[in-house]
Amino acid sequence: MQGVTKRFPTGTVALTDVSMSLDSGEFVTVVGPSGCGKSTLLRLASGLETATGGSIEVSARATSYVFQDATLLEWRTALRNVELVGELRGASREERRSRARAALDLVGLTGFESQHPRQLSGGMRMRVSLARALVAEPDLALFDEPFGALDEITRLQMQTELQRIFRQERFAGLFITHSVSEAVYLSTRVLVMSGRPGRIVAEIPIPWDYPRPPELRYSAEFGEITGRVSTALGEHS
Ligand SMILES: Nc1ncnc2c1ncn2[C@@H]1O[C@H](COP(=O)(O)OP(=O)(O)OP(=O)(O)O)[C@@H](O)[C@H]1O
Ligand SMILES: [Mg+2]
Image (cartoon, rainbow, N blue to C red; front, side, top):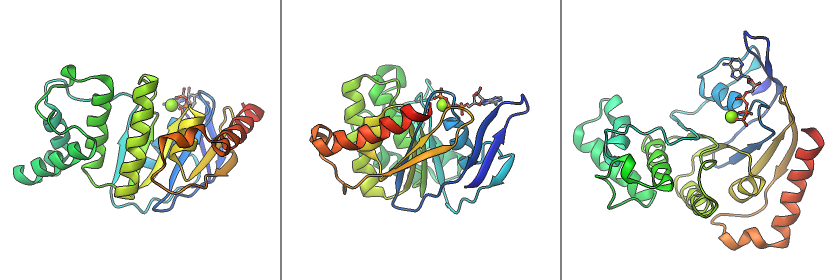
């Protein structure tokens, strides 16, 4: 993205002069105050929305999108929810089924394939949603606050899982969150946005390799980096 601006027909300017890039192997997280244009940024990256200024270039072959809510089809089992992606692409029944099983296994849901969403916990529903995003083998994965609705314990578990999956699958990740510690724990780089109209006001590289042990969150260096992100947020909200 180069100098991207988004003005809605209502006159609201959601983003001004946003420039950013994302390479394969990177997991970039965007934090910023509510309403600053984070979801808009993701929608622009996915092509769901078009910019009113600047330019966006996406070279990904396959892009997936994970929403804040699991957005599952209630009348389909976990397996059939994940299979939907293959169905829409016209994959054979066998192929889409084996891929869906592998994706559910990746998110730790083997044994729950035939449960319906209402029979799963909130964290498990989010796992199904993640599996549905990963089954397409994306090279770009977009996440819009996927863990925001989960309780703290499940949320920390999902963070650990996601960085394990990221390390294994190596897609480029663009992740939106309100949680500074989630951003620092997951990412290779954190971008801080100002209040609306959003622009990028700080870029903080995260030094650790993957996998990252959960205890990393209690280290002094982790505290120092989250402090820097929070300070940047506080100065520009
Ligand atoms: N389709 C739309 N039409 C008009 N205005 C919109 C539209 N979508 C978003 N906006 C406005 O653009 C601004 C940014 O919205 P956006 O959803 O990107 O914020 P956000 O950073 O994701 O907020 P949150 O953290 O609460 O999810 C808001 O002021 C919102 O009202
Ligand atoms: Mg949003």
